[in-house]
Length: 173
Image (cartoon, rainbow, N blue to C red; front, side):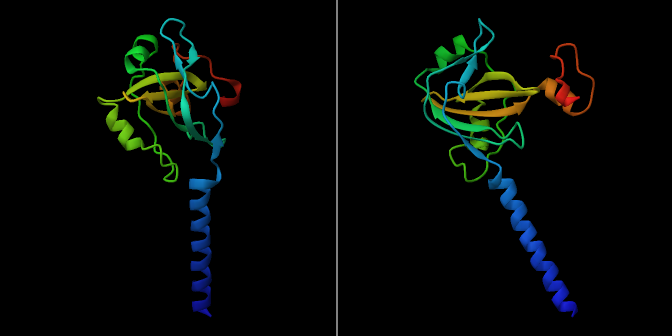
C-alpha cells in the first residue's frame, strides 16, 4: 500500500512539474503582429518615440508580465544616423527569452552592447516603470525588449517615488 502511495505522489509531482514548466515557458506568450508602434526610438530633439523603418519582424509578448516582450527585426538605417537622431540607452541589459524564441540571444546581445551593438531608448514608461529598449547592430539587425527603469525599481520595491519620476498610476498604489 505504501509503494502505491509513493508512486502516486511521484506521478502527481511529475505531472505538476511538467505543467509548471509548460506554463512558464510556453503558455502565456502570444505572437506580436508587426506594426509601426513595435519599433520606435525616442528622438533626441522631440523627446518622444518615433517609428523607424523595419522588416522581418518577429515578436512575442505576454499579458502576465510587462517585461516579457522580445522582438527581432532588421532596419536599413545605419548606427551613425540612429546615434545622431535618437536617445542612447544607458545600462541596457537584455532579458533572457524562452529557448524556443531562437532569434533572440540575450547573452550575445548583452555582450555585443559592450562594443558592436548600440542600445537606444525605444519608449520610456511604455508601462509605468518599464522601458522598451532597442539594440541595433552595424548590419541592421535589431532586437527589442522591456526592462525595468529606475522609477520602476523604486516603486516595485515599495519605496516612495522620487521627485524625478512621474506620478504612480492608481492601479499600482
